[in-house]
Image (cartoon, rainbow, N blue to C red; front, top):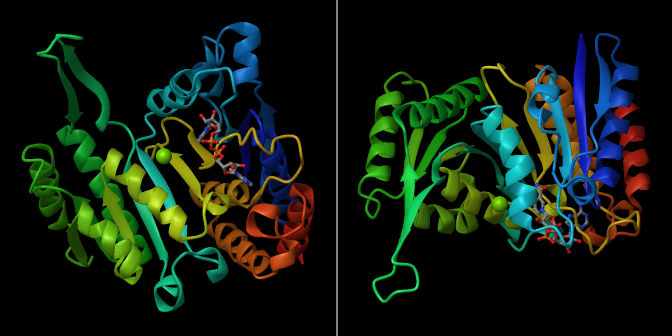
Length: 353
Ligand code: NAI
Ligand code: MG
Protein backbone atom coordinates (compact mmCIF):
# COMPACT_ATOMS: atom_id res chain seq x y z
CA UNK A 1 0.00 0.00 0.00
CA UNK A 2 1.41 3.36 -0.96
CA UNK A 3 0.61 6.29 1.30
CA UNK A 4 1.29 9.87 0.33
CA UNK A 5 2.26 12.07 3.24
CA UNK A 6 2.40 15.86 3.16
CA UNK A 7 5.06 17.23 5.53
CA UNK A 8 4.48 20.59 7.15
CA UNK A 9 7.43 20.87 9.52
CA UNK A 10 6.65 24.53 10.29
CA UNK A 11 8.77 26.63 12.63
CA UNK A 12 11.20 26.34 15.53
CA UNK A 13 11.56 22.77 16.75
CA UNK A 14 8.84 21.65 14.32
CA UNK A 15 11.34 20.59 11.61
CA UNK A 16 13.62 19.00 14.24
CA UNK A 17 10.96 16.67 15.60
CA UNK A 18 9.29 15.98 12.25
CA UNK A 19 12.67 14.80 10.92
CA UNK A 20 12.69 12.08 13.60
CA UNK A 21 9.12 11.08 12.77
CA UNK A 22 10.06 10.74 9.11
CA UNK A 23 13.00 8.54 10.11
CA UNK A 24 10.53 6.30 11.93
CA UNK A 25 8.24 6.15 8.88
CA UNK A 26 11.19 5.19 6.69
CA UNK A 27 12.22 2.49 9.14
CA UNK A 28 8.68 1.07 9.05
CA UNK A 29 8.77 1.09 5.26
CA UNK A 30 12.04 -0.88 5.37
CA UNK A 31 10.59 -3.49 7.72
CA UNK A 32 7.17 -3.84 6.15
CA UNK A 33 7.21 -4.72 2.49
CA UNK A 34 3.48 -4.08 2.22
CA UNK A 35 3.84 -0.42 3.08
CA UNK A 36 5.48 2.41 1.25
CA UNK A 37 5.45 6.11 1.92
CA UNK A 38 6.11 9.05 -0.33
CA UNK A 39 6.76 12.46 1.12
CA UNK A 40 6.27 15.96 -0.14
CA UNK A 41 7.40 18.87 1.96
CA UNK A 42 5.70 22.25 2.19
CA UNK A 43 7.55 25.32 3.48
CA UNK A 44 4.48 26.96 5.03
CA UNK A 45 4.66 28.60 8.41
CA UNK A 46 5.81 31.83 10.00
CA UNK A 47 9.09 32.17 8.14
CA UNK A 48 7.13 31.76 4.96
CA UNK A 49 4.76 34.42 6.25
CA UNK A 50 7.58 36.86 6.91
CA UNK A 51 8.83 36.41 3.34
CA UNK A 52 5.55 36.09 1.48
CA UNK A 53 2.97 37.82 3.65
CA UNK A 54 0.91 34.65 4.06
CA UNK A 55 1.11 31.47 6.09
CA UNK A 56 0.35 29.16 3.16
CA UNK A 57 -0.32 29.41 -0.57
CA UNK A 58 -3.75 30.66 -1.56
CA UNK A 59 -4.50 27.31 -3.16
CA UNK A 60 -2.84 25.49 -0.23
CA UNK A 61 -5.83 23.32 0.55
CA UNK A 62 -6.11 22.05 -3.01
CA UNK A 63 -2.38 21.25 -2.96
CA UNK A 64 -2.90 19.14 0.17
CA UNK A 65 -6.21 17.63 -0.85
CA UNK A 66 -4.92 14.46 -2.53
CA UNK A 67 -2.57 13.33 0.26
CA UNK A 68 -3.38 10.42 2.57
CA UNK A 69 -2.16 12.30 5.63
CA UNK A 70 -0.66 15.58 6.74
CA UNK A 71 2.19 15.48 9.24
CA UNK A 72 2.65 18.80 11.00
CA UNK A 73 5.42 19.95 13.35
CA UNK A 74 4.43 23.26 14.90
CA UNK A 75 3.88 26.80 13.77
CA UNK A 76 4.63 29.97 15.69
CA UNK A 77 7.44 32.46 15.66
CA UNK A 78 8.32 35.48 17.74
CA UNK A 79 7.17 38.48 15.71
CA UNK A 80 4.22 36.81 14.06
CA UNK A 81 1.02 37.13 16.10
CA UNK A 82 -0.20 33.72 17.29
CA UNK A 83 -3.74 34.30 16.05
CA UNK A 84 -2.32 34.74 12.52
CA UNK A 85 -0.27 31.54 12.60
CA UNK A 86 -3.10 29.58 14.16
CA UNK A 87 -6.00 30.96 12.13
CA UNK A 88 -4.35 31.15 8.71
CA UNK A 89 -2.76 27.72 8.71
CA UNK A 90 -3.88 25.26 11.36
CA UNK A 91 -7.51 26.28 11.61
CA UNK A 92 -7.75 26.68 7.85
CA UNK A 93 -6.69 23.07 7.40
CA UNK A 94 -8.84 21.74 10.25
CA UNK A 95 -11.94 23.53 8.98
CA UNK A 96 -11.25 23.21 5.26
CA UNK A 97 -10.76 19.47 5.58
CA UNK A 98 -13.64 18.99 7.99
CA UNK A 99 -11.39 17.39 10.59
CA UNK A 100 -14.12 17.41 13.17
CA UNK A 101 -12.61 14.77 15.45
CA UNK A 102 -9.64 15.57 17.64
CA UNK A 103 -8.15 12.42 19.17
CA UNK A 104 -5.88 12.94 22.13
CA UNK A 105 -4.51 9.88 23.95
CA UNK A 106 -3.58 10.42 27.59
CA UNK A 107 -1.34 7.66 28.89
CA UNK A 108 1.29 7.76 31.59
CA UNK A 109 4.49 6.01 30.57
CA UNK A 110 6.84 7.01 33.37
CA UNK A 111 5.52 7.61 36.85
CA UNK A 112 8.45 9.87 37.64
CA UNK A 113 7.04 12.47 35.22
CA UNK A 114 3.56 12.68 36.68
CA UNK A 115 2.53 14.94 39.56
CA UNK A 116 0.25 12.04 40.51
CA UNK A 117 1.92 9.25 42.40
CA UNK A 118 1.13 5.65 43.13
CA UNK A 119 -2.12 4.05 42.17
CA UNK A 120 -3.70 7.07 40.51
CA UNK A 121 -0.69 7.51 38.26
CA UNK A 122 -0.73 3.87 37.14
CA UNK A 123 -4.31 4.20 35.96
CA UNK A 124 -3.83 7.07 33.53
CA UNK A 125 -4.81 5.56 30.20
CA UNK A 126 -7.60 7.19 28.27
CA UNK A 127 -8.53 8.63 24.91
CA UNK A 128 -10.24 12.00 24.63
CA UNK A 129 -12.47 12.44 21.60
CA UNK A 130 -12.87 16.19 21.31
CA UNK A 131 -15.31 17.97 19.03
CA UNK A 132 -13.05 19.95 16.70
CA UNK A 133 -15.27 22.03 14.43
CA UNK A 134 -17.92 24.04 16.29
CA UNK A 135 -19.26 24.40 19.82
CA UNK A 136 -17.79 27.10 22.00
CA UNK A 137 -15.13 27.82 19.33
CA UNK A 138 -17.62 28.63 16.57
CA UNK A 139 -16.31 32.19 16.42
CA UNK A 140 -19.87 33.54 16.58
CA UNK A 141 -20.69 36.43 18.82
CA UNK A 142 -21.12 40.12 19.12
CA UNK A 143 -19.46 43.08 20.78
CA UNK A 144 -22.01 45.72 21.62
CA UNK A 145 -21.61 49.29 22.83
CA UNK A 146 -17.85 48.93 22.73
CA UNK A 147 -16.19 51.24 25.23
CA UNK A 148 -19.49 52.47 26.66
CA UNK A 149 -20.88 51.79 30.10
CA UNK A 150 -23.48 49.46 28.54
CA UNK A 151 -20.76 47.41 26.90
CA UNK A 152 -21.80 43.76 26.42
CA UNK A 153 -19.94 40.91 24.79
CA UNK A 154 -21.67 37.79 23.51
CA UNK A 155 -19.78 34.62 22.62
CA UNK A 156 -22.04 32.05 21.08
CA UNK A 157 -21.61 28.31 21.30
CA UNK A 158 -22.94 26.60 18.21
CA UNK A 159 -24.03 22.98 18.62
CA UNK A 160 -25.65 21.68 15.47
CA UNK A 161 -27.57 18.42 15.38
CA UNK A 162 -25.19 17.15 12.71
CA UNK A 163 -22.04 18.29 14.52
CA UNK A 164 -23.09 16.96 17.91
CA UNK A 165 -24.41 13.66 16.71
CA UNK A 166 -21.42 12.81 14.52
CA UNK A 167 -18.82 13.33 17.25
CA UNK A 168 -20.81 11.33 19.80
CA UNK A 169 -21.43 8.56 17.28
CA UNK A 170 -17.73 8.49 16.41
CA UNK A 171 -16.87 8.07 20.10
CA UNK A 172 -19.39 5.25 20.53
CA UNK A 173 -17.94 3.46 17.51
CA UNK A 174 -14.44 3.83 18.96
CA UNK A 175 -15.58 2.56 22.37
CA UNK A 176 -17.27 -0.44 20.76
CA UNK A 177 -14.24 -1.18 18.58
CA UNK A 178 -11.91 -1.09 21.59
CA UNK A 179 -14.38 -2.81 23.91
CA UNK A 180 -14.13 0.07 26.36
CA UNK A 181 -16.49 2.34 28.25
CA UNK A 182 -17.51 5.80 27.07
CA UNK A 183 -17.84 8.88 29.27
CA UNK A 184 -19.60 12.03 28.11
CA UNK A 185 -18.43 15.27 29.69
CA UNK A 186 -20.80 18.25 29.62
CA UNK A 187 -22.32 20.90 31.87
CA UNK A 188 -26.09 20.82 31.52
CA UNK A 189 -26.78 22.32 34.92
CA UNK A 190 -25.31 25.68 33.91
CA UNK A 191 -25.41 25.74 30.11
CA UNK A 192 -29.13 25.32 29.76
CA UNK A 193 -29.32 25.17 25.95
CA UNK A 194 -26.10 23.79 24.53
CA UNK A 195 -25.30 21.16 27.12
CA UNK A 196 -28.89 20.05 27.68
CA UNK A 197 -28.92 19.43 23.95
CA UNK A 198 -25.55 17.63 24.11
CA UNK A 199 -26.82 15.34 26.88
CA UNK A 200 -30.02 14.55 25.02
CA UNK A 201 -28.13 13.63 21.85
CA UNK A 202 -25.81 11.43 23.94
CA UNK A 203 -28.81 9.61 25.44
CA UNK A 204 -30.32 9.21 22.01
CA UNK A 205 -27.21 7.81 20.31
CA UNK A 206 -26.58 5.55 23.31
CA UNK A 207 -29.66 3.51 22.39
CA UNK A 208 -27.81 2.28 19.30
CA UNK A 209 -24.93 0.98 21.44
CA UNK A 210 -26.42 -1.14 24.23
CA UNK A 211 -23.13 -3.05 24.43
CA UNK A 212 -21.12 0.05 25.41
CA UNK A 213 -20.95 0.94 29.06
CA UNK A 214 -21.44 4.68 29.60
CA UNK A 215 -21.08 7.41 32.19
CA UNK A 216 -21.88 11.11 32.09
CA UNK A 217 -20.06 13.74 34.17
CA UNK A 218 -20.20 17.48 34.59
CA UNK A 219 -16.95 19.00 33.42
CA UNK A 220 -15.97 20.30 36.85
CA UNK A 221 -16.44 16.88 38.43
CA UNK A 222 -14.66 15.26 35.48
CA UNK A 223 -11.62 17.50 36.06
CA UNK A 224 -11.49 16.39 39.67
CA UNK A 225 -11.87 12.71 38.81
CA UNK A 226 -9.17 12.97 36.18
CA UNK A 227 -6.72 13.87 38.93
CA UNK A 228 -8.13 11.78 41.79
CA UNK A 229 -9.51 8.72 40.00
CA UNK A 230 -8.21 8.58 36.44
CA UNK A 231 -9.12 4.87 36.32
CA UNK A 232 -12.73 5.95 35.80
CA UNK A 233 -12.00 6.99 32.22
CA UNK A 234 -11.49 4.96 29.04
CA UNK A 235 -12.91 6.84 26.07
CA UNK A 236 -14.14 10.37 26.77
CA UNK A 237 -16.31 12.44 24.41
CA UNK A 238 -16.66 16.15 24.96
CA UNK A 239 -17.09 19.56 23.38
CA UNK A 240 -14.44 21.75 21.81
CA UNK A 241 -13.73 23.97 24.84
CA UNK A 242 -14.04 21.26 27.49
CA UNK A 243 -11.89 18.98 25.38
CA UNK A 244 -9.23 21.64 25.00
CA UNK A 245 -8.99 22.12 28.74
CA UNK A 246 -9.31 18.47 29.75
CA UNK A 247 -6.63 17.36 27.32
CA UNK A 248 -4.14 19.89 28.67
CA UNK A 249 -4.92 18.63 32.16
CA UNK A 250 -4.51 15.13 30.78
CA UNK A 251 -1.13 16.01 29.28
CA UNK A 252 -0.05 17.49 32.61
CA UNK A 253 -0.87 14.38 34.64
CA UNK A 254 0.66 12.11 31.99
CA UNK A 255 4.05 13.79 31.96
CA UNK A 256 3.69 17.04 30.05
CA UNK A 257 4.01 18.29 26.52
CA UNK A 258 6.88 15.99 25.61
CA UNK A 259 4.47 13.11 24.99
CA UNK A 260 1.20 14.80 24.08
CA UNK A 261 -0.09 14.12 20.58
CA UNK A 262 -3.26 14.91 18.69
CA UNK A 263 -4.88 13.69 15.51
CA UNK A 264 -7.27 15.91 13.58
CA UNK A 265 -9.43 13.38 11.81
CA UNK A 266 -11.90 13.52 8.95
CA UNK A 267 -13.48 10.10 9.53
CA UNK A 268 -15.23 9.99 6.16
CA UNK A 269 -11.82 10.28 4.50
CA UNK A 270 -13.18 12.79 2.03
CA UNK A 271 -10.16 14.88 3.03
CA UNK A 272 -6.78 14.08 4.54
CA UNK A 273 -6.43 13.95 8.32
CA UNK A 274 -3.64 15.80 10.13
CA UNK A 275 -1.27 14.43 12.78
CA UNK A 276 0.72 16.69 15.08
CA UNK A 277 2.42 16.88 18.44
CA UNK A 278 0.47 19.11 20.81
CA UNK A 279 3.45 21.26 21.72
CA UNK A 280 4.40 24.45 19.89
CA UNK A 281 7.56 25.64 18.16
CA UNK A 282 9.46 26.14 21.45
CA UNK A 283 11.56 29.14 20.36
CA UNK A 284 13.50 28.90 23.63
CA UNK A 285 15.17 25.63 22.62
CA UNK A 286 14.89 25.76 18.82
CA UNK A 287 18.11 25.04 16.92
CA UNK A 288 19.80 23.37 19.87
CA UNK A 289 18.99 19.82 18.86
CA UNK A 290 17.50 18.96 22.24
CA UNK A 291 13.78 18.97 21.49
CA UNK A 292 11.96 15.85 22.60
CA UNK A 293 10.81 13.98 19.48
CA UNK A 294 8.56 11.47 21.29
CA UNK A 295 5.32 13.45 20.93
CA UNK A 296 5.95 13.77 17.19
CA UNK A 297 6.76 10.06 17.03
CA UNK A 298 3.52 9.24 18.87
CA UNK A 299 1.75 11.23 16.14
CA UNK A 300 3.17 8.70 13.68
CA UNK A 301 1.48 5.95 15.74
CA UNK A 302 -1.84 7.76 15.33
CA UNK A 303 -1.18 8.05 11.61
CA UNK A 304 -0.57 4.30 11.41
CA UNK A 305 -3.85 3.65 13.25
CA UNK A 306 -5.59 5.89 10.75
CA UNK A 307 -4.07 3.93 7.88
CA UNK A 308 -5.45 0.75 9.45
CA UNK A 309 -1.93 -0.38 10.42
CA UNK A 310 -2.77 -0.74 14.08
CA UNK A 311 -0.07 -3.30 14.68
CA UNK A 312 2.50 -0.60 13.92
CA UNK A 313 0.56 1.91 16.00
CA UNK A 314 0.77 -0.37 19.03
CA UNK A 315 4.42 -1.15 18.37
CA UNK A 316 5.35 2.52 18.26
CA UNK A 317 3.60 3.24 21.56
CA UNK A 318 5.21 0.24 23.27
CA UNK A 319 8.62 1.33 21.97
CA UNK A 320 8.02 4.83 23.38
CA UNK A 321 7.25 3.02 26.63
CA UNK A 322 10.59 1.19 26.43
CA UNK A 323 12.50 4.44 25.83
CA UNK A 324 10.69 6.10 28.71
CA UNK A 325 12.01 3.43 31.04
CA UNK A 326 15.59 4.46 30.27
CA UNK A 327 15.82 7.75 32.13
CA UNK A 328 19.26 8.88 31.02
CA UNK A 329 18.51 8.29 27.34
CA UNK A 330 15.76 10.93 27.31
CA UNK A 331 15.99 14.59 26.28
CA UNK A 332 16.63 17.30 28.93
CA UNK A 333 12.93 18.16 29.35
CA UNK A 334 12.53 14.63 30.77
CA UNK A 335 15.68 14.93 32.83
CA UNK A 336 18.00 13.09 30.45
CA UNK A 337 21.00 14.11 28.43
CA UNK A 338 20.18 12.82 24.96
CA UNK A 339 19.77 14.89 21.82
CA UNK A 340 16.74 14.83 19.53
CA UNK A 341 18.55 12.66 16.97
CA UNK A 342 19.90 10.26 19.62
CA UNK A 343 16.39 9.59 20.92
CA UNK A 344 15.21 9.09 17.33
CA UNK A 345 18.05 6.67 16.53
CA UNK A 346 17.55 4.74 19.76
CA UNK A 347 13.84 4.56 19.01
CA UNK A 348 14.41 3.09 15.56
CA UNK A 349 16.88 0.56 16.91
CA UNK A 350 14.34 -0.66 19.47
CA UNK A 351 11.44 -0.58 16.99
CA UNK A 352 13.19 -2.61 14.35
CA UNK A 353 15.14 -5.06 16.51
P1 NAI B 1 5.59 25.50 23.37
O1 NAI B 1 4.89 24.22 23.39
O2 NAI B 1 6.29 25.85 22.12
O3 NAI B 1 6.66 25.57 24.56
C1 NAI B 1 6.30 25.55 25.93
C2 NAI B 1 7.49 25.04 26.77
O4 NAI B 1 7.64 23.64 26.57
C3 NAI B 1 8.82 25.66 26.35
O5 NAI B 1 9.62 25.85 27.48
C4 NAI B 1 9.42 24.62 25.45
O6 NAI B 1 10.82 24.63 25.42
C5 NAI B 1 8.90 23.32 26.03
N1 NAI B 1 8.70 22.33 24.97
C6 NAI B 1 7.69 22.26 24.07
N2 NAI B 1 7.84 21.23 23.25
C7 NAI B 1 8.98 20.60 23.61
C8 NAI B 1 9.66 19.45 23.14
N3 NAI B 1 9.23 18.73 22.09
N4 NAI B 1 10.81 19.12 23.75
C9 NAI B 1 11.28 19.82 24.80
N5 NAI B 1 10.67 20.91 25.30
C10 NAI B 1 9.52 21.30 24.72
O7 NAI B 1 4.50 26.62 23.71
P2 NAI B 1 4.65 28.22 23.72
O8 NAI B 1 6.00 28.60 24.20
O9 NAI B 1 3.46 28.69 24.41
O10 NAI B 1 4.52 28.64 22.21
C11 NAI B 1 5.61 28.87 21.32
C12 NAI B 1 5.05 29.10 19.94
O11 NAI B 1 4.44 27.90 19.47
C13 NAI B 1 3.99 30.18 19.88
O12 NAI B 1 4.20 30.95 18.72
C14 NAI B 1 2.69 29.40 19.78
O13 NAI B 1 1.70 30.08 19.08
C15 NAI B 1 3.13 28.20 19.01
N6 NAI B 1 2.27 27.02 19.23
C16 NAI B 1 1.96 26.28 18.13
C17 NAI B 1 1.22 25.13 18.26
C18 NAI B 1 0.96 24.34 17.03
O14 NAI B 1 1.58 24.55 16.01
N7 NAI B 1 0.06 23.39 17.08
C19 NAI B 1 0.70 24.69 19.54
C20 NAI B 1 1.13 25.51 20.65
C21 NAI B 1 1.87 26.63 20.48
MG1 MG C 1 -4.87 23.70 23.62
